[in-house]
Image (cartoon, rainbow, N blue to C red):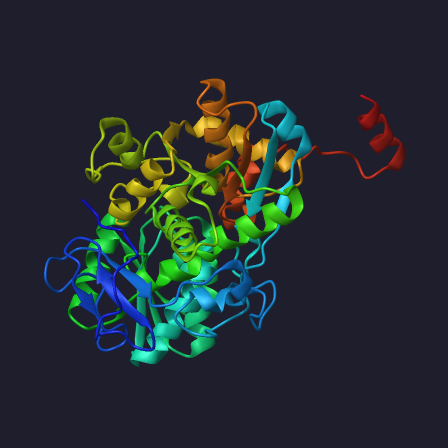
Length: 421
């Protein structure tokens, strides 16, 4: 079982108060000496640890407002390779809130990051680490958003970037981003999980620096989503949210938000009773995390065949499950699977409030609706739904979910007649 306690003493391996710890066996490693993604001793996942954990007051003096780097006190560096990223809006959605029947509903729209998804938060930190280590090639497997973000940040840093995509399974908008930013794009005859297998092999052979969420530094950037939600919600609502509902693919965000909350509790900045319930949502055709939660497993079992309209979460082997499953359980949350039809309906619901997201993002709203209907989420709860990518990431899905154009003659009277009909 994963050990996620943060009370360990600073080891000799630490560099300026930063080190890596294996969550399985507890072995510690220097953070920037050599390249490692998992434990040398047991193969377990690594987590970035700090000698000094910040409170909210430490964020007030950060150099860059409305940015990931506002939270530099909780990160391994003071600044990174930045476009910049972070500072995304926390939307009000009053009609959807009333329809859901919850006390308060806000939507954290990560699609407003520079490349249109939350992945930018991880890349600003991850590519900075790549610079520190001195690598000459970056690589990732991707369902689309990771490739877009890594390509942009790799271009910003001037480092060659390689992305592996499942052939025919990535939305056009995301492929276009990677292409324009100059990445080498390899389309693999297999699903995302096979792409990740290959890119891990390349990384193990020293051919590239891996920046999928297996890399613990990427999750450090992503944990700022949780820090922003707490600060924004508390400033505007006078309390912390009871629950955060988020889409789950590789489970990096679930793990990252849980780490943010653990660090704040350990520093004394957040009462354990104020930690929001982390609630994961997956598509029915790709739901290994839901299966693990329902069956009480400590890890997921790989789904070889996955399919859903929500391409960004079409993942059958979530590598961060050992970190994310305790996050769901220890915060009193849960996980739920929703159909593609429910996802599309939620995408339309968000669009009706002016919030445009890709299908995977809408899974959070679809999951909240299902859990509310089943009575798992109660009427007095204050909830934040995380939406992870912009609607233009998948323009074909947006067009399919939206209204059809109506042909009219090139005459004003004819247009008025058509409108009257």
